[in-house]
Image (tube, rainbow over all chains, first blue to last red; front, side, top):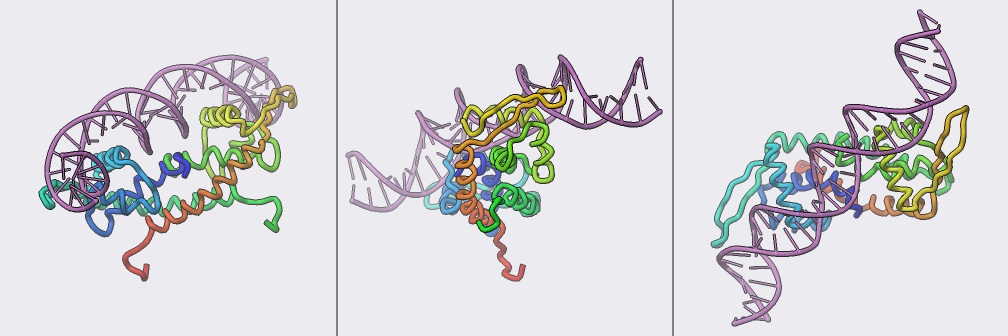
Length: 106
Length: 106
DNA sequence: GTGATATACATCGTATCACGAGGTATTATA
DNA sequence: TATAATACCTCGTGATACGATGTATATCAC
């Protein structure tokens, strides 16, 4: 997918990944993979940004000898997802503008 | 609309604006306005980028004493629009991932 | 006739951001 | 005992949207 298109989806997609259940870095990447692929460096940048924006909180827990950082969505994070859904109506209008054909049979 | 979301749409939207008929800067902004608002500085940056990528060609013509630069879409430009439509299938999958509800009644 | 608005183009600096390259450490597996 | 998988993190770079700013002409209101 075009990298510019990804930009608008990444943050919200990460939030969606932790919406139903707290998750951690490695798992988020695997869960998102069928929809959007992202590198670790990208993910940790995003997680840091979302934490700074108070859209999620972090807690560290040990799991089988390794430390994991679990991310939990907050109210502002949930709101961010809702805002995305609002934006979607505009996006669809843009899509129709872009994909409209001169030939009505197409 | 979220600026990151716009990023993925701007280039293709500009191409769509000149797809059916050659157009010029000021008109492109007005045509796009109902769908995506963009500033002049943004548009001219985009037009330059698309020209460098050979997705459009430029010709200068005089119109009522003022010079206008008319932009004409090329084959690669049309192909870019088709690629966007291909990407759209993935985008829709991402959208469904983001907007899915736990509660099936919602 | 003059000031404001619309038309029309352009450049520069800044802030944001995705990502590759690289790093550390442990556990599981071949 | 090496390799892969798990799990985290940082830094530098390139791409890019946009505000600020600049130039110039045409039109219109007062």
